[in-house]
Image (cartoon, rainbow, N blue to C red; front, side, top):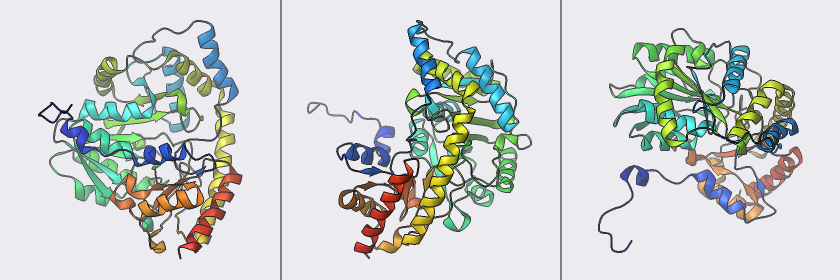
Length: 390
């Protein structure tokens, strides 16, 4: 490489910073006693009947490629499930695409929709991959700050103020990672009106939509005139504890989905066959598992957020997902320093809020999708740490 005179790494890749989540994940792998509140991965093992469906697929030799769009059986079951839970109707042949996790879905929609210089408005803080995928596709991220005083819910008025002639898309994480915010119906209605008025596409990441507590969940695709301009991204990782299986899906108007399929064909081919059969089993017979895990997350979240507030780290009540997002600015440390010192002094891993955008500065993300007893011990360690540095 020393002999090369030109810059060999593309400007787009150089523009994207490494994931702050993976940085801490790599460190904690070397620390056997750490309590990890860093990675958003359920501590539940994939339910046995779902695992067995994947195993049976392999044992019976069902290991060939599927259709690029995914198996017909899985797409039909996705359509049925979406109709049942969200009241939305999609054609399994022309409007549903099975992806390799929701992560592929986010990348696909950006590369399919964006031309160089197109702007994408998205709430800040937001999932770390959003900004990166926009940049990789040649787009321009336009973050819209959200605030604790509004429970980090994005507001239509702030999105409206960010719209320019270059705006092509609004990207929502609903529920939000890292804040756990769920967008209220009235704000979704306002965002929908803006999308129609300005002829915008909305991409809605709804992977946490089965994990919503104490409030209603509404997809923006349910709003008038919105299904025709909305791309829904969802999957199996969170609700079914299937992170490593890497199965997601896209719901979109036929014209958009056909174009996304073109990108998917040339980059992925299809999602894994065994993983798709496991996902099919999850949809057909996994609802009791979803409800069991949901109840446990709700119990953990109440205890953990109450504990953070008691310690003196103010945290809004999360309405969705399984994240707490406490304010640590009163400790005299910034979020990077807080996370690093907490890790090495007390062996508790959290993620700096600034990893999720500028509006996350002086906050940290702490997942409560680990065991109740570990969360209790984490609170003991965090309280000791805060008192030490008071």
